[in-house]
Length: 148
Length: 148
DNA sequence: TATTGTTATACTCTATAACTATA
DNA sequence: TATAGTTATAGAGTATAACAATA
Image 1 (tube, rainbow over the protein chains, first blue to last red):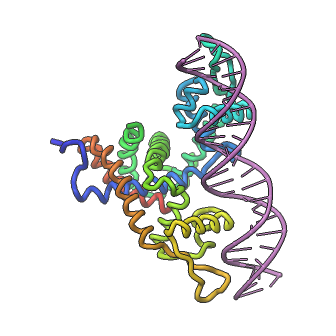
Image 2: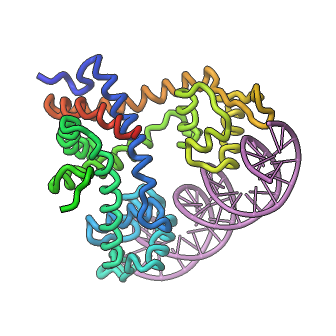
């Protein structure tokens, strides 16, 4: 029996608060762990989206990143200039274009992921076994939350 | 086999990776839950720091927020114009100033905290008991990580 | 001389409005 | 007409360089 849809109980407010503040502060620290200083957060995010989706049109990317179309035009142009994406004509609609990531982008993303994970692993290495187990158990739940 | 004090094991890399990506995505969503659209993330952060530390000089704030001194000059001026901080002369050093938050800032921060918590509580309310227990157990560990 | 904070100025990222080409 | 993308332009936020006042 799990309560309507809202909160779990009164004393859980503290847990929610702790969770929120920890997530915000951790994310700030993670954000500074950039691989390539010349890549903005949105550029990184676009590459991540392309890595998941394979390819997309500028319009789709703008909607996914919650950015206006003209901003995406600029971002895609910068990524193309850096050799990280390729632009091709859309097969069915000559107004659209198709953006695809290059191999260079793939290896760069992989290095980025490695660096950030290494930093986080260094931190988690200083936790005791019980704390680490709690984190491991929570990771999938956090992922679920993030995509809800 | 290397591992001095570092990571826990090979398969834990996946957990670290999941943790990192979940934290980043959750934080992006939390960031959009702003109380006052007229307050930038850094302004919010400065108010948060003042709430914790009581008061600070512009230089201290710049170092804590990882922002250059001229940027903090501007931020503090904006906060003062909005009636959220007060500037006073430093008692011992006439070069420095002391920045303190006003009561208006306190109540605004409280409202902000409430809003974000409500949003997060709505999400966590859809978790089952086991998932929620995992999160509750991990919250203090995440806090510890964030301040390491 | 070194340090704290400020002013002047430029750069980056994003937005809105107006335009072009295609559907 | 409606839609995809672009160009032109403006605004917010931060940085660097040069400067003022105080230590």
